[in-house]
Image (cartoon, rainbow, N blue to C red; front, side, top):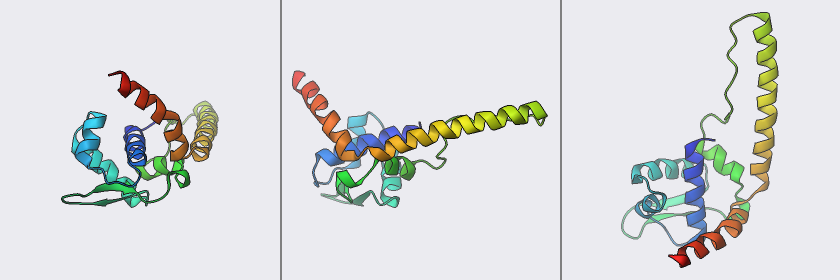
Length: 143
């Protein structure tokens, strides 16, 4: 998995929890433990993918563009990932044996990737939120 996907899920989870109230990249960066520039880069990709909208300036921030139950994890993944393949590809040296092995590994990789993408397509941001928010809230209450 690409690291932008993890950052994007963090962002989407926080925006879902805010229930339509804008959230700044500075707050998101502190919550993830990274630089705001990293968050802004991912926010830009999410906005280009139609998943969030952002406003600059005082009182600005980002919000979801759609209801969380209408956004699949796959859409988030595809919005932030330039190269959707996540398994390494076999590099052939040109020999017949390498070509056969490469073809087999390529088919195996595509099957695994297709299965994961299908699973990501099945899960919505709302479902993710329903699972993780209670755990996060319980953890924060202990502190």
